[in-house]
Length: 298
Image 1: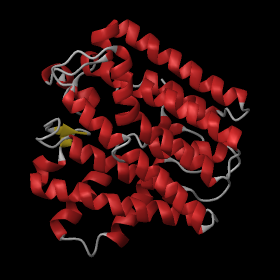
Image 2: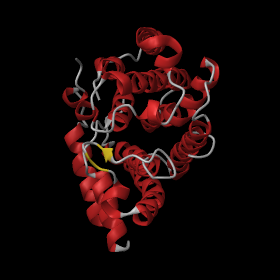
Image 3: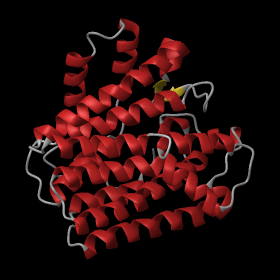
Image 4: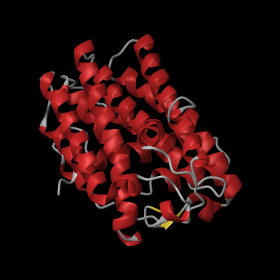
């Protein structure tokens, strides 16, 4: 199976972990100590760093040669905040994340809620500084931040989370289910891919190809999340298996079966790679990321 930890990129997973640790050391001093510690717990608790690797991979694919660690790390701050809130009792009410107690189990609901909120402006600061580090003008840096925040907001991730909650106990048709997950999961993955490409001053054609790639692998990622929820163990996942059924969520395996869902994810990966191939920006790293999405076990 492809392991994104071994991707040949100037920015690897260890570099992202180090950048997040440095960011915590410099940016959390003015934050209430319990909230700051909850943020550290969330940001430095491991994870695939898939979204950060995607920023780095698209940046390099369109010719970027600068240091994109900070911009890539910003997407992980957004993602971490979403996980903190997604696990809260008023949301999916989960106890385990990345093999450890969820933030609200470790620090309490109030601190977890505040930590998640505090990570939003931290992500803005991280993304803006990261874009400036790449030599982009302030207006272009602001545009990247705006796109990331839009993807994370009510028209993207947050809106998708609400639709997902409202669909509990309801059997959604496939087109509506895909609409939910293109927002909840896919929007930030698309924005991450575009952020890397925009950081390297991609052409409109390259940005279009990267967006098509991100949209396809974003949906494939969620499909495989649904499949793994019924086929993998809690130890493998690092989070509680079987939560979709417990919460009576609409899922791809329920609609298509596990084989049909896996085939749908594989077809999306094929479309993603075709988009990059047509634009002549398909790299081994971007191909590996796409293949990892369907081959992973967590």
